[in-house]
Image 1 (tube, helix red, strand yellow):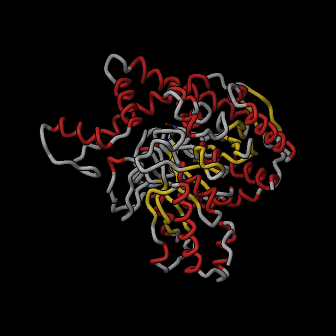
Image 2 (cartoon, protein in one colour; image 1 turned 120 degrees about the vertical axis):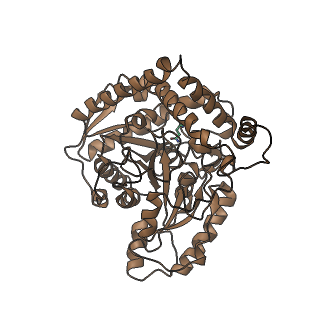
Length: 466
Ligand code: GLN
């Protein structure tokens, strides 16, 4: 039997008793291993053929989990050497909910160390390669998740995470669908923190239906995360059936087309016209605080990251070394060996931004900018249902070109993804075309808790594109 079927077909076929599950997982593991050899999408691969009891309602649907999301009995390193060998004895809430419904974890996906990066080139366990061209990046930091979703072409959905764009960016670069929910809609319990006020667990899949389906399972209040919203469970899949977009008002922020690659712009504009042909109307408008978002993001994100990384000292989990010297000497030795260059850079940047004397000038200022950005978006959502823009300013770059970027130029790649992440609003990236055979992403941004609107818009767009 052929298993190049969609998630929806897999569930229907399983329900009808038409899937030979043992045969299916055998083929799935074979393909996953072969892809991993070639593209390095995974840090850990599980063997799904070993255990065969399958449960409704997901009938053993394979999921992959980004390595910074804790999985009981499966190593969770967040891409860092300092967590090598760390095997949690508990599941993150999102994982627990998916397992309880019958999803099964096929492996842990490759990522930038702790999420620090845009190209998945900062992992201690290798670099995932773009399935459209192995000389190019999958994007990051959830690069393994997006690459696997694109290349596997079998029923599978990836659980991923975004702090400043780590779901949208790789989804765009790998031509798949990435959904980042409203901050607090999905519990962060069991997520290895990057920056607590920004981190969100979300999804990457081949189709809008896939991310809507899994969101319906993982969203909703969790008492174990104090920032979790008091939201009830909801079925998002019914929004994935939308066909026409009459009455939908789309805002197109003109700042989001500045310094964007010409071919990327062209693809996104043609997508906006296609949305119009489905019944939506659009107008251009201004989000004036856009230009401050990147600086504010990198202050807030590194300030929070630098405090979070303090717990990795070689005493409790992960990397250990022979105990010698004073505590400070020991901690320094472990961190020097266990953290990569970018992690060290961020600890230094973040520590500086939090230092007394600089705190008001940097961190507090950045928090004020964040408030203004939220205000800008709130104003826009008084007028528009959805904001449409390019996801990334460029098509997936070659590794050789990434190596030439300065850290600052690297950070600038996030200019279009950080504003929505600072505001905590939901966003979805969907493929809208190709340039030189490399995928281009359309970014849809919605108001807080307007996931259903994004799913409707993307689903209608996806159907039109086929
Ligand atoms: N590229 C951004 C950063 O390096 C976002 C990463 C993320 O969302 N985890 O901070």
